[in-house]
Length: 211
Image (cartoon, rainbow, N blue to C red):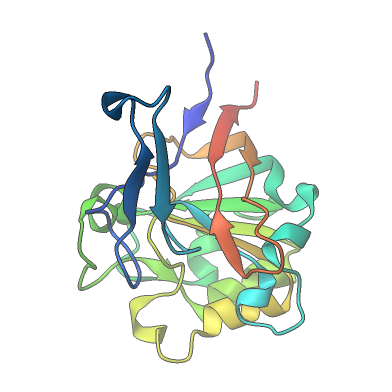
């Protein structure tokens, strides 16, 4: 029996997505006389629960295969930000108890609202520039949220939060399902698929309660 909490969202054709929807084809099928089922998927690097590497917004920065294990594996704090309407600020992070954490996940209203839809929501909760700078100034190396972008809705023209975090080498996790996760401290194991030289990749992630 394990206490591990799976915070990944399933990949399927009708899921919430950027750009093209994921698609797959069956290359071989037992039903057609083959010894096994074999499928081929066409998905974007930012599909499902995924990591943005610093190179996503900073040319020459670390790509997803160059992210250190120390950034994606270790103690992680889940912050309760369900009262935030749209943009997480520095003040919100301080009030939620982010101080002292190296890795943080934001549990917002997204997990039971925007994340559950198959189409992009009109509004969602994201991290604002003041919040992003607070994380950098306090030595946070990993930040994740429960929607397909960590950026707040009002900032998706210039993407300041991504620029601030990526410039500082902070790894970003997006599309984490935190609906069943209580705020508190956990051991996180996040393993991005090591697409060589690329800016992002699916990243299966689990949390283990710290005892």
